[in-house]
Length: 225
Ligand SMILES: NC(=O)c1ccc[n+]([C@@H]2O[C@H](COP(=O)([O-])OP(=O)(O)OC[C@H]3O[C@@H](n4cnc5c(N)ncnc54)[C@H](OP(=O)(O)O)[C@@H]3O)[C@@H](O)[C@H]2O)c1
Image (cartoon, rainbow, N blue to C red):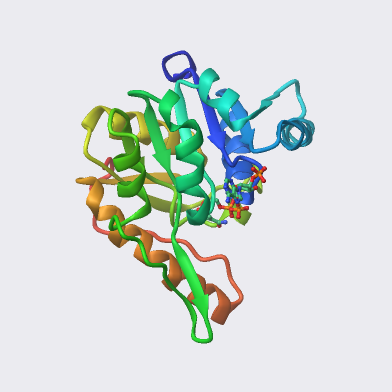
């Protein structure tokens, strides 16, 4: 599996979600680069996470543009407000690669969390529009970063993944299944990411009310989805 996937670079990999994915994937045997706007922050994060993993399992850090150069697969893991500037600066080098988009546009006001205004429909569709040659897949949007970081524990939940390209969906499913207890629920086309991203304010409100780290489970599916 590892050889077929190659190197995964996580842009914005210094945040809670990127760190959790990096930990889980390196533990599963993948080659991971933690990307950041700052090479120093990337190196520090990679060193800290490698130490946490122990047993010789390591990852590297790189400034986002370098992380793109080294990648076979890219993960966009920055806040929605950072996605456009990030892709404007490094998008030209991404080409036709698989880009996994985990970005949730969420806004907060007095009433709590709500969907942020997204002119292109969803963060993933805007990402695809900015990277016309790439295969963008929406994934990992409704999973709690906190649980992801608890390596050795099962996530015991599902993640919707959606995109327009079947091969990209299959490759992303492999990445999802490499994480203990995480099941991909696959749907097409990419525009369904609007619905997936819309679940996030709902889950945040639930988490606030119940002081929890909730996640989703779809029932009624056959054993393999
Ligand atoms: N947290 C969760 O439970 C969760 C779950 C599912 C999906 N998500 C989504 O995954 C993405 C990352 O989540 P997170 O909680 O890890 O976010 P975060 O900590 O706010 O941001 C992740 C990283 O993005 C970089 N960044 C911040 N602002 C940026 C900007 N304006 N331009 C470029 N890079 C910027 C920072 O890295 P450097 O400063 O090192 O560059 C930061 O460490 C978000 O879109 C979020 O909605 C989060």
